[in-house]
Structure formats: C-alpha cells, structure tokens
Image (cartoon, rainbow over all chains, first blue to last red; front, side, top):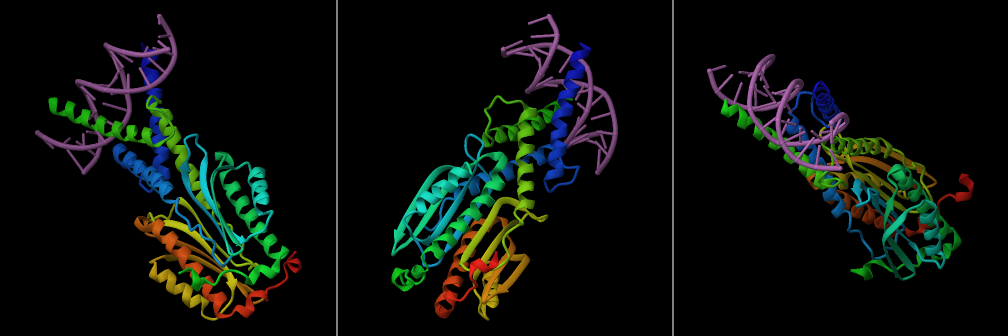
Length: 173
Length: 173
DNA sequence: TCCGACACGTGAACC
DNA sequence: TGGTTCACGTGTCGG
C-alpha cells in the first residue's frame, strides 16, 4: 500500500518535529543525538518531580515578623494536571482572618489540598498547599501573593496596637 | 551484517527506554502514542520557559509592613543550567543592611544576576534575582529565606523605635 | 574499513 | 476491512 507508506512517513515527521522542538527548548544544539536529547528531557522532568517533594517543608511556628511566602516549582502537577504550590502567611491574629483567607482562595478558584494553622502569642501562621488550574497558574500565584499582602496590611492597619506584642524571640530557643 | 542489525536494535531500545521513563513521569498511562507523549513533554517544557519570563514582576516600592518573599519556578534555568529565583526583602532601612545582605549572598554562593533597591520614608525594599547551583537549589532557597528572616529580625531588634515610622499607606494611593 | 546515527519501507497487531 | 501504531531490518551518509 502506498497509503501505508505515506502514513508511516507522516508519523515519523510528527515525532521528529516534536523532537526538533525539544531541541530548541533545551540547552542543546540542533545536532544532538535523539537518545541524548531524550535523556536530557528525562533529567529535567525528574528534577521537577524531586523539587515537588522537597517543597513540602516550611516553618509552621509563628514568628514575630510579618511574612508572605509563595513557593512554586512551576512543574509539580497533581495527578489531574493542576499546578500545585505552597503559600505561607504569618501575621497578627484576628478573628476574621480565616474567613478572609477562604474568600480569597474561593475567588481565585484555588483548591486547598492541605492547610496548617498555628497561633502563638497573638500571632498566627497559615501554611497552605493549593492547586491552580493549569491555564491560570501564574496569574493565580501573583493574585494570591497580592491578596495575601493586602490581607497583611489589613491586619496591621485594623489593630496597630498589636504590632509590638509578639513573643520575644529569645524565649523561643 | 548481524552486527549492524543488533546495534540498531540497541539504539531503538535506548530511545524507547527514555520514552517509557517519560511515560511514568508525566500524567499519562503506558499506552499513549509516542507522538502524543512527546507533545505533552513539549507542552510541559514550554510552560516552564513561559513562567521563567513571568516571574520578573514584583513590587519595588517599600511598603509599611515587613515582608519576605522567595519566588521560584523551579524550572527556570539560566543558559548555564543554574536555578534562578527571586527574593524580596522589605524592612526598616539601616546603614549596614546592604553589607549584611551581600555577606549572606556570598556565604550561600549565590550569584546575583540583578538587584533593585528602593528607599522611602526610612524603609527599604530589595529585590534580588539570584542564581543557585543546580545541586543545592532547594537548600539555597531555604537558607536564603531563613537568612533574610534573621536579617529582618536584626533590623527590628536593633532599632525598634523605627517600627512605627513609615509613611501612612493612605498617602500612597 | 568500521562504527554510529538516521530515514525508509514493510509486516504484524490492534481497534 | 481500512486506519493507525509499532518493531524490525536495511541502505546510506559522515567521522
């Protein structure tokens, strides 16, 4: 069959075009082996997986200073292909902090995979592991960061008398 | 040639083994097309490249509240294969803040690709784009974060009278 | 000459 | 039966 011959040729072209595209995306010239190229790709993807598992540790005890942290490996997907990243907020505690936080997560369509909360000496720290839609992952990260920032400002401006209250760091080993 | 035949077979096995490995790493089953698999790989690598360019915006004007931010895509490598990430520190200004910062960067063997500094109303914000060795990227990020935290605590404890000095946010639109 | 990598066409297997 | 994907062996080019 001539049909068969051409179909196979198109299949090869499809595969090779993807390989060529990978050659342009990775740090390698256009004349690297097909096998070596794939080896580099494997290495790259593995690094992402590795960092995914290493993103998991963050401080959970509230500190005296206000903090916002948004950590993303940019490549750690859940099983369903959503982008997973970690956000941490440390600030003065207040009664409506959690509702505000939940509202932010809902408005950004972020799914909360895990949440840790700790309060100590009037201060609180929230560590969230959230998943974002793949299409809006970057926007979600930036929006979340800005939202947390405004949340922090809100806490400070609503009760400025608390700003000096935290525990003395020397007492916390 | 029998030699030729077997050599070609080994070559195919090498390529296919890498493809199989990619199949286990990506969200796809073991029975996906070779071409489709590569298409997903391309998509993934492209996302990383994209996020690399989008990490670049962070607030540069000092805010009234203390802040530490460490942002990493985990996949944005410079041309030499080092991990690039962004760190931001906002706190009260003091004369030896920059030297301390430089000392931290040196001790962590972080190469500074870009640095922005702004001071306003006695407060300062430093935005750094740094590159870390690929092998110690995660450790570097965590160490940097902790170091910045201690730096911030040092600023507050060394001159706590400054803590209330900043500009009123309402004046800054 | 030999060795490595590649594209090609073909038969087989699977909906 | 076609349509599609894969593995295989072979011819060829370059070092």
